[in-house]
Length: 204
Length: 196
Image 1: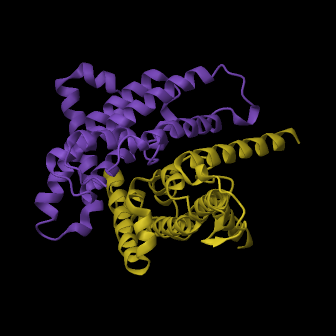
Image 2: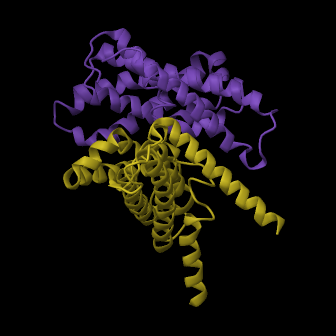
Image 3: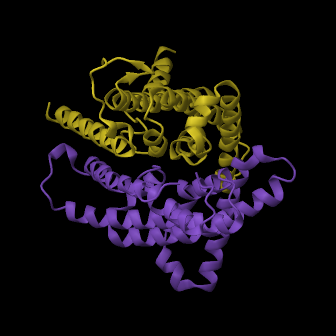
């Protein structure tokens, strides 16, 4: 029993570091770069992705035995699109500002490769409980990265964090960080750091 | 933003000022993944132009003639993705039957396109901006042409950088992102091209 629990826990942790969707598999980059100019929007996106990923993983692992193999991709897409629509409307109702800032990137989660990738690669082969854990783990891993990137960009580019001034009045913000090039720069350096960390480990 | 009726402005804005790859950050998976070689970038770029223009016109028609009259706007995410997926499949069959040379040229890029967010994005944006059919046509052409243009330039630089001495931990994807940052900086310069 204990052993089982350990495995479940591993499934959860997998998404956060060892198979982190952004850093290691390099999937679903578009929203990470596009909405990471402010931490608030980034968290909104992260939570939406966690919800959609967990929900679609849950439904897909429930129906995995009754869906014929050759139409499984369209079925998965419809399930994902349903969850995306639900999120879209919930966000529009409860926090219209974030919904407005996320704009077209919210409905575009439907073509985000992370979600279809997890549906096809994990949820369609595993039981419900593990699929939920996998969805949560991957979603949190995604949110973590988008949180890091948006923190760097907002602090350097605007001098604020979650809308609050933290670097003082005299700080001259690097405007470039909140503009599109900043996003590419930050993720490039982040991936380089990860490669460096991995190399260091191999030497030991 | 796009209330200008001038078609040339719509095209320029979609192509340069709001370049889909470098300013809007869409279609990055294929941008980073495929651009390691020029030939496949050209193939992908042209395939994207081809499919985007057709699929966007189709989803524009579906939205305005099927969804809007019956107040089914909330179904647009599901409908668009299904329209695009089935359209790509259908197109693949036709091209394979009728134009085998073109089919060989597109190769594996046609099926890959379904998950390329450029197409869905231009369908959504066209609806969001409430464009007319002709405007939508020009708009989707501008967007996909911007993608094609961006990926080909990027691939050219990336082939050069293969032989450049770069720091160990920046090899591969990180340097590609730094490169994209520089290109994006250049594209930001187009912002002052004209005022809307």
